[in-house]
Amino acid sequence: MRDDKPGAKYGRDEWAQWGVALVVFAAVPLLGKKHFVNMGNEILVMGLFAMGFNLLYGVTGMLSFGQAAYYGVGAYTVGLLLSKGVAPFWVALPATMAVGGALALVLGPLCIRLSGVYFTMLTLAFAEMVWGIVFKWYDFTGGDNGIQGIPMPEALHSPLRYYYFTLAVVFVSFWLIRRIVDSPFGAVLQSIRENPERTGFIGVKVRRYQLAAMVLSGVFAALAGGLFAGYQHSIHPDMLHWTKSGEVILMSILGGVSSFFGPLMGAGIIVFIEDMIGKYTEFWEIWIGGIMLAIVIFFPRGLIGTFDTWITRWRNHGKHAETAARP
Amino acid sequence: MDGNLLAAQFIGGLTSAMSLFLVASGLTLIFGVVNVFNFAHGSFYLLGAYFAYQAVAVSGVGFWAGVLLASLGAGAAGVLMEYFFLRRIYGRAGEAGFQILLTYSFILILDDVVKMIWGTDYKSISKPVALAGSFSLGEVTMPRYDLVVIVIGLAVAFGMWAAIRKTRFGRNLRAISSNREMASSLGVNVPLALSLVFGLATALGGLSGAISAPVRTVTPGAGIEVIIGSLIVVVIGGLGNFWGALVGALVIGEVTAFGILFLPQWAILFSYAVMALVLIFRPEGLLMKRGAVR
Image 1: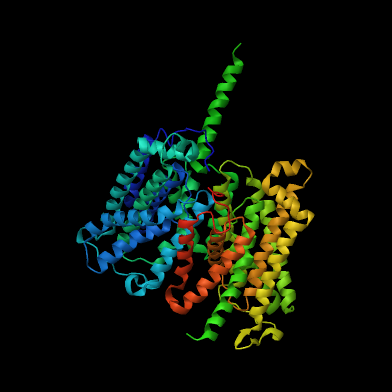
Image 2 (image 1 turned 180 degrees about the horizontal axis):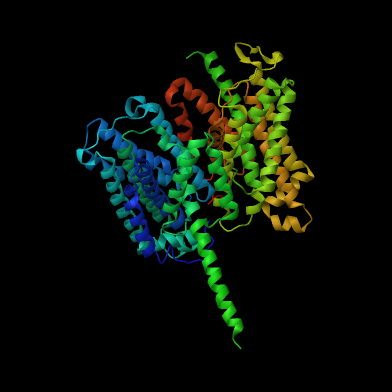
């Protein structure tokens, strides 16, 4: 999928990006409109979901089409634990990570038995299975009614407070993802992306690392789902639907899978576009499909990637001119 | 349990197996020859169903003429997709991922196009009058229409086998599938053959949609159900293996038919369970050589 040079580092010079992202998101409530806080929250949640997905796709090179299962299971963990009064939010939110990871440990070994297109389709099929279970198990999940009125702790009742809580959780997760990518473990994941066979030849147990990437990605997706459930106070089986998996893929490739903050930027753009389109037409799928088609054909490196290429070309152009001018 | 009920269930399973097989065989043909996983293949089933509705229920063309038109229409749409879009990404680094994303975007686009043209209500068309009744074989009765669907499915299976094994075109396809470059340098018009295969396979998807329209209501969004059903079929049989698609379709058709009898609410889970078992014990599919995939 990625077409940069082998061994190219995943993301670089991004201190400025961290700063800009933090300042922009922290400043959103200053705009003074509740609508912007809602959108900011959705961008943060989907951004975390997309960055977790990219750990699998951009970093390890595994295109999963079933991440919505983990996202939705995270949301249902919060929804069920809270609405049945089993555990408080402060327990339920970390529990989403355990549940998401556990689900990946069950489905992962089946999916990684095949690779490439087969892997993608298996993740999709098993995610549809999870969606089917949530959708049909009325007694437990409420079926297609979903769960409404999830009770939240007093401290997080105001949308503004919850927004800053989400901001903190999401940025700590981003930092964790960055640490994972930079670790020796992350280096092995990137080497699997570049060439699974050769990575195997040097004695790495490729499948084990692929499973670990699936588990980590599932953990962050479930955490994002849990955060979303806490904000909306209601959840619905649509959160597990395959279009949700497609949406998170689109966000990642739109921003650029080879840049660290690409998926977050893609999430911002898509949430914004969906908000705009939603006002004018019910036919939003054709827009999303059209954008995806345009990216695949014209901008396969995503927005940040394309921008990077232009910058490099522009710089090199200058250099070539200098060399030519030399006697 | 009463034997007639079991037999009726068996025939019902056989009928849905044939409709699955028509889609899955196209999927597996495209994968085998063009080396593309056409994620949007279910959308051509959808197009076929709606084209048939348009021709038969709206324009009043005869049933079989409508089915023929629907298959041709879906095939033409498939050729357009291959010629104008897929062709642009052949041979690109990381092609497989881009194929999935490109064909995925077509699922979304075609879904909305269908909604824009025909609306979101359920549509149905009636069976041709001559096939409305049922047919008895001793104790067992079966709808005549089901019998026709089964015959069409088997005829297509045999016809495709003969076309691939016995004709010059089929020989070219086999050559392309084993080495595209070599086939091209030996004078096979590869781009044309790829477009034709795409058209043929999507026409089969359209045919499946058209002949299923009288027995299942037509709704937008059916595309994804169909693609997941046929995905399970090809994983069981082995992707790229023509007879595998037939075996996989029979297994899934029957497992679902009998699953409904015993555990109606969870019938859908049986096919996933079968797929998981195949993946655990024979990940390359039932009819593939060991180690063929990976």
